[in-house]
Length: 354
Image (cartoon, rainbow, N blue to C red; front, top):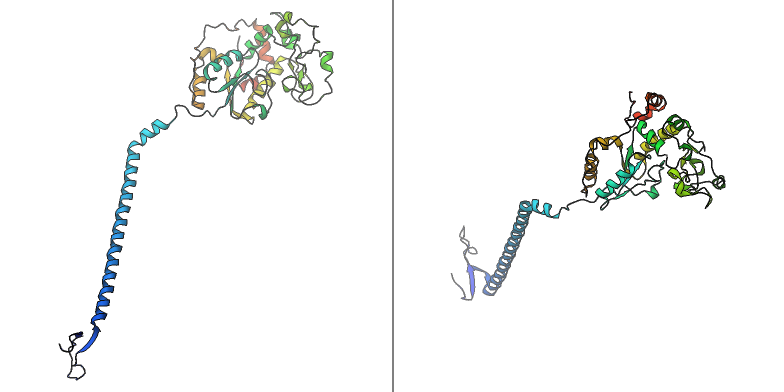
């Protein structure tokens, strides 16, 4: 190595004897080498800093992943507790109203009171659907809450007719003695309209009581007698306020007898399932409740709504007197011949034998 002490030289070993190759030539000066060293140091510092950042990011990411895994583990371990704690005791009822319907003398008053005791704190229980419980119903969603459950109570025709003969509510033309069952059955299901009621004969629309049209009900007026002309206190079975439902085809014609009216009413009640705001229509025999009690229908409502009863189910009542005193064999024979048994089969009633 030779030359000035201020220069740095790199010697390259020559392959041949060449005067140029044999010389030692300076490549970088000391200042240039110092600059290179400085730049190299800066680059190494940046690399170190970048590694530190990556290390910190890696540590942070690992910590986040650990937290996620830990939280998931905790949730898995205690998920059964959270579902138990946050789950409400009872869910929001699907059924918003329970409507009880059925013909007169079929146990609807008792059933309405019983269901109100059981569920009225949480679900509205009422004896109206689109009309009062005893009447022909019509599809009128404006007056029926969505998801209304309809309980339809039927009674066998033999005992029902005898009860209707004994208690002919709002049927003044059908007040008969006990042994006059045939006259009761064969009298047209109507009465004479009063002069006051006839003043509405030319009116159209649902202008009459319970939203009937004039041709669907007799009488149209709830009180068709002039004020003071009738002593309602002496009226038997509310015969001062007649309520004879007519054929529901708009013809204005009455039913030929009460059995025809019963058949049409059964078909009407079977249609309630298809009305717009009906959740369901459950049909029960009055005799079923006497024989088995009300546990089944109450449990069924609980299952459908998630609402628990506030009552005790009515027990079976086999000792309760029933209309087994059916007059005589002639009455059974008459009913077997004149009842529309094809329609009665739709609600699972069949002929009795004497």
